[in-house]
Image (cartoon, rainbow, N blue to C red):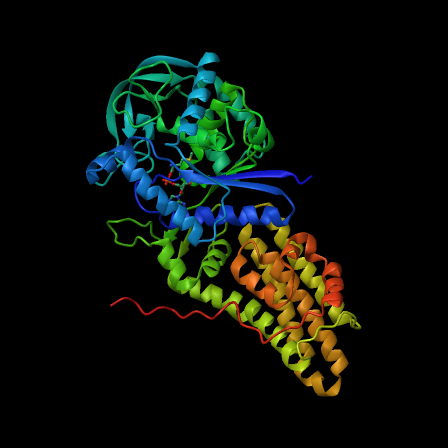
Length: 517
Ligand code: ME8
């Protein structure tokens, strides 16, 4: 039976429309999910929206609507974004769903039963934007000398009666956990380790100043701190508190993919809540970097906020996906601009791989009447090319398993370059007159390489690759990595008499857009 693999993204605040950071995270998670499927895992992929908390309540008030109305409208845009970007989640959780309330309340009861919750008074610096309290020592000074959170957001001195979670009790167990590969990349693991080594204070986990949240069981007037509720989403989607069925099959999650700003919540609070409730811990938390617009953070005041769907419309969904994973070293911050997208995609997808595939198919169409051969004699050069391609693909697979996408794609590109060099050296267009049999062997060698390279990169650019594989007569159920060895394909070719028709390019060259007037 296939091994289960459960991956989640953060659930986004639907207090506005999705931005490029949301698109980046969703695309990366989708590529991981598709890659794991191609590797033969049984994959479950969950995303969703985080609809409670003060941030949502305040935004709704500003707009003169209820938080539920705001959540309903905005949450739908996140689903639209996933559909538009070909992000194939299995579950989309909304934290205002009844099933989620039940799950969060059950987690609460278990933490209470473990003796980890107590009532006290809370005073501290609270950032509504981050939905987090900060210690005085963590604050930074703004331009006008005002106090700001470490994320640069405004903080207010807040006093309220609150339930507390005995976070301090879990310090040693958490530090022990960080000695495994629980937090990645390493730099984030070091940050969190230093934070926890500095000593943990108990965490305020309920609010009385507003009611837009999950009610605390048996404690009128208290709603749960939004992060307690939000983190629970990862098990709500599996049917918790029912611990049979999906929960049993998929929990613990293999990977929580999140941005670097929320690593602390996932690597400190979440495992501590789970330890308290006696539930297994997720296997890994990966904090990816931030995406910057020409090196700058997007913000309404700078007027540089990009709608990810407009970007996808302009450049194509597959090409945007490829660019984001290829350009940014996963885990670090990255920058994008229309020029960078066009340059990267033209060089690698259009001119290198696209051109290779198009040249190969059209030469087979023109010079062999589209008919394929299943037996041909291989020269040393053909065998060497096959080896280079296999090496490139092994490099991609290994790097992708390690979430090192840009390295993986670089390895794949090296194999594409080897193919293009082979075409130039073998010059099949001259063989046509001098040695047609050799020409056929060259074109078939290329076709085999194109097929393998296409299958390898399919998790990143699924739509274009499926169009290409359709043109090559590769059956839809023979596009996973198991099909990389081409014995099966050649056998089917022999039976089916597939022909290559006049090919249609799948990676068009892009133009750098004119700057807006
Ligand atoms: O943090 N580049 O929601 P959110 C890359 N609801 N990633 C970015 C980014 C950028 N410029 N800006 C944000 C929340 N992100 C909580 C999560 S999970 C139980 C609750 C990432 O809508 C961010 O790091 O502010 C996070 O992983 C995700 O987008 C959602 O951010």
